[in-house]
Picture 1 (spheres, rainbow, N blue to C red):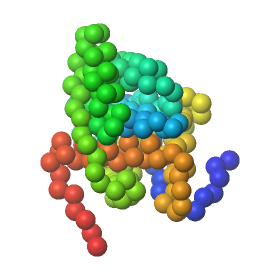
Picture 2 (cartoon, helix red, strand yellow):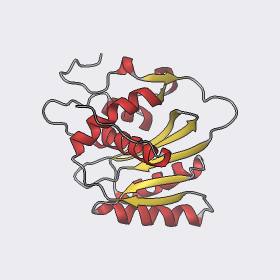
Picture 3 (cartoon, rainbow, N blue to C red):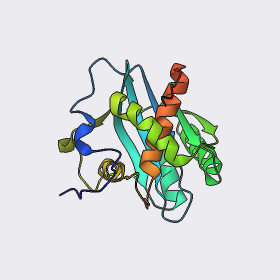
Picture 4 (cartoon, helix red, strand yellow):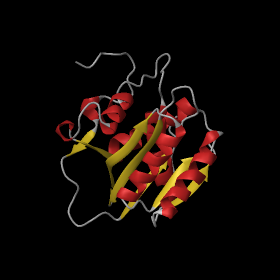
Length: 196
């Protein structure tokens, strides 16, 4: 049973879900990577299949293992889905991760172009202001399509337990989703409007 927590930002039942990807292939396949900053942090890399205005979260890396493990997992998921572009957060360890993963992908003739971006914005603010975009434009697999212990299951658990009240032990998944939303909006050239 899900634990009722105050101030949950993402409730399981308000997220858009899908069983199968639309037919006809995606417009493009994108990813972002929120790299672990150490201390049991998760390396989180969601893979989005873009169909028009919708973003289907088809796969992910969501792992709090050591860099040599998570680097390989990131390269693997980028190769598996032929991800076209992936943006890595380049704070502290992130730059190293991006270079290492790019090297691994190239060595296997992968097509992924990795870019790096420094994050400066307040993390909690970034997570909150991008949550509407995530809820309106992202689709997540139906619960019947993944197991709780899988990377996808871990991602959903970490996303749907994030609270805007008090402390979160792990904010890597909601942070990664916000990063993906911002990356998409920058590619779309969307003007993000801030309402008072």
